[in-house]
Length: 469
Ligand SMILES: *Cc1c(COP(=O)(O)O)cnc(C)c1O
Image (cartoon, rainbow, N blue to C red; front, side):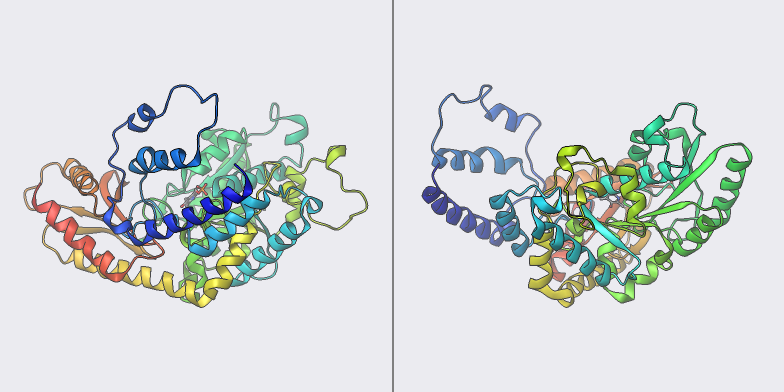
């Protein structure tokens, strides 16, 4: 394909994209494809000779689109949002065009310096003090892994990377039941072992860890000759928005000299609104914080902001400097590949710059405030509907509920049938989770273009489908 043909296709695809978004309500939210449908439609062998883009594009519509779940659909209330606003898509188009590898300052100085500035814009937006610096990671999972590795190295006096873990003291990491599974995987990969991830009981409506129980567990482990290394704090957990008392947990950590990483992957975006910041009161005492602009802020995957109080600890854990990566004569410059696990890095700061400038913080705050308000409105409506009960009240825009009409004998089976029937219907998309072992239905509002009517329409769909079960 030559570049003049590229211009034609670029225009066609941007028209397609605008039309896709304009007409998206006419599509079922969750793909209705059966397992194997896409695979069957794809030839078993790669082509020996090229085919025209016309044919490829036709096949894209015919083969790919039916197998797509529409995360940008205003009826998408499952998982967490994954938003791609128009300025973000345009910035990604430019990033792809330039295809710069942004591993070192000198491999694209603008990308590094833009990243420094954008992470600091985000820091200010969330109301964090200037004691935090940061980096853009590919995902919250990577940021959490980097934080757990830092905990490990710090607790082993920086000998884990050099000597391995054999013969070292047993490390202990603490968290509640509400943390994301990325924490378990970070523990596995760091070589600490699932058995050393210590779950602290939770209490209260926010299902946050009990700081006294945390303190007791740390003391007990130390007395038994184990080595406490750090704490992973949940702010807005995946299941129900479970949130630990950040300040109190950090105080316990400080008393034992432990490193604290806060996972606010989803909820962090809402901290651009000052009125929601009480959710993570005390966060300035943490060592490391992650939040995903790629969830709720309209900056598409991948873009995960990782703030740290001591970049030196992170770099000491992850930096490696073979001769070919040395940038002689540039002391004092930042090489962000030393702050993260992969060497190669995309130019991710550009889409943040485009999005923050297009909407301004006020525009983004308004979107988040609307989502929170509409979610609360829907929760109140559902709880007032006979046969329905709230299970966990909204944490920001996430709540859970159950369908429990009189005489229900197997509530888990009934609610699973309801979720499946709703998703087969196609107007909205929801997922289930477990709360105290009961199967419940999860609802979150976060799609960038959702309206109040879309959210309230969910009440109609849920009650209408429940009545048919
Ligand atoms: C989504 C989420 C993650 C995982 O985020 P990735 O960027 O996909 O790795 C981790 N923790 C919480 C609380 C999340 O909501």
